[in-house]
Length: 450
Image (cartoon, rainbow, N blue to C red; front, side, top):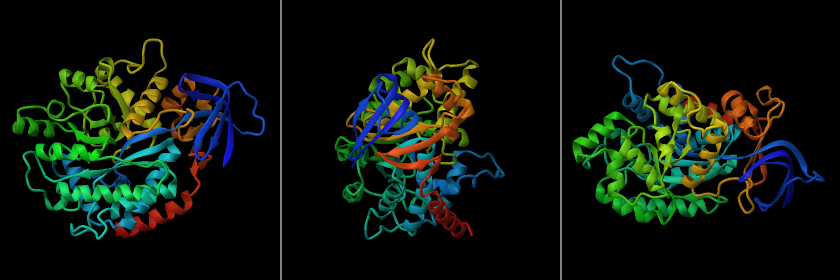
């Protein structure tokens, strides 16, 4: 099927262009013409490439807001994790599909068009494998298919509770594999992913505390050139435990012991020395930043300014899905740096737009991390976001000023439509199946939280 969309202005790989006609065939961009009349094309105002969401735990959308009750001691990531373990105990594949569908619909509504699903919920509620080892992966893929979002699926290898190969805890029973069992899961997930258009299946060693050196070495070849993601240096305690075990900090240890390169994404990497920051940038790996979740969990702030100065690449993700808003992730990334440095416009080049710098960096880094082509270009999937030109925060703006208005003022309220492979999945800011998806989600949560 062939169709064409005409935009008064569009952000293309080489900059903003006017009167842009994008021709779509078979879900891909077949042609891009600039300074051209609309002719018979469907007409819209402002086109952006959809953003990649490089890090999501979809099931955690179901517990958004449930961990905001102060405990009797100091609350931290570790107390939040205990609540998460109790929630995850209850989920069936159908529950996961219902929760993930709402998360993915909300991602599309906020301008994300591909998600990297860092998926570690594998087994049944008693910890035994399902007959189909990828039953929970199938639920994720069903949600992606229902909503239309592109999927980079990242099955997680998780074997231990802490550094040195310590035995997993009871709360981790649904996550655990040995290397052979994980390889079987990966084969099954890859077979299932063939039913989705342009799906990618990579791998995700959960963290250095969850894998041993030998296991990590055995896992890397299983990626087969697909993306490799890992949580790292998210929490101070993790850094301290790594130092106590190995004498080395997590990022330094990983760079010394694994072939980290452009196909890797180091998620969070919050607590790094100057030397680690520079070394990560030199590796070509992407830093996976999730500012909303990192703020919610009290993780700390990534050294973004120093990382960019060293030539590093980053993308953004929604992680715990406590709030799903691509523009807010970008805004909070910049605002965190401003609060720490007591300055403004820290992640832009001199004389440049901060919104433009954030959007382009997240687009390029996220695309690299998820194994996709970045931007609106011939041959790429027709994953397009249009903005509402009547939104007050976009009034009288053009070029990168539109991105400044989107990121720092309008947020997701400015998203008008989203096309995924040329199919309109968001209309006037709402996913086309939101009513059905939200009703199923509410029924699922009512039962799970009863």
